[in-house]
Length: 116
Image (cartoon, rainbow, N blue to C red; front, side):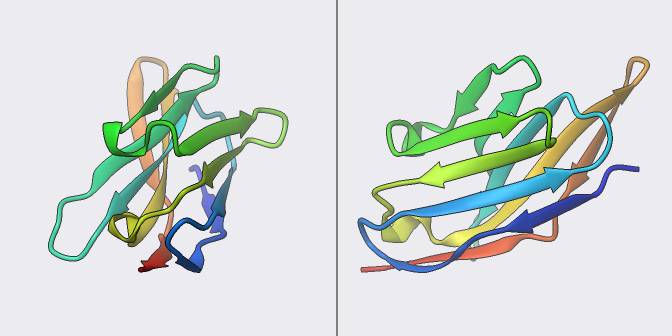
C-alpha cells in the first residue's frame, strides 16, 4: 500500500510562486500532480517517471517544473508565474506496478489559490 503525504499550497497573488511536495512510501514508477478546479474535471498538470521522463499540460509549460528525489521518494512541483486560472485543488498521484498489474494512488489534495 502506497501512502502519499502532500505539503505546500496556499494563497498567492498572480505572478507569485509556490512549491508543492509529495512524499511517497513504497516503490513508485511515476509520480505526478493533477488539479481540479470547481466545476471542472480533474486534469494532469505534470508527471515524472523514475527514469526522469516528464510530461506537462500545455497550460503550465514554461511556468511549472516537476522534479523528483528518488532517494527520498518525493516529487516537487515548482510553480512560477502563477495565474488565477491555476486556482484548484492539487492532488499528488502515484503509479506503481506489482508484476504487470498497475496500481494508482492519490493524495488528499492541497488547495492552491491565486488572487488577481
